[in-house]
Length: 247
Image: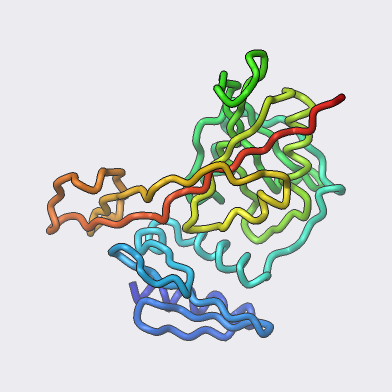
């Protein structure tokens, strides 16, 4: 792990960030902003810092860089009003999401890209419409299964613009999404009009000690401690966006 932490240190020092390594914790200081990131193997129990799983440091190193860069406000800012929305095919969405989203692609049915000067900077991926008990008989609920921006870029108003476009096109009863609490408190989604609906419990995973490959599991599942270790996330926030109804 030290090799990866030292590599992070060198990368951010080139960006004029002060970096200190303390065991499995790395502390960043930039422009009067301090960010503490801890990488753990077992269940996290420290709430005064960002906790990221150790396997991500190994298997998704570039995404960890983008995540820290965003938290330190080192991203380039682009305004959504200067961007254009286009439908994109599944292959292009998959490639983008696998490159920039920690949870990778999820096989959405409808994929939209936000372009600036012909460059793809953000992707929103939605499910097909489903009948929901919380909606009227003729309405359908959709899920925003993935949303992310290109690494190193923040798009002001990007999520709101993509939501409005989808609502104009599909006229959904509502749109639901899950926010992994390990990476976000959901505030950017709430600012875009989502509201808290419910919360899910933590998900448990087995991690191969050599390859760091992640396997989903239940907490009572048997595992070989010689070959695997067990970890978990913090659970998810379930948020729902309800478009304004025309009178």
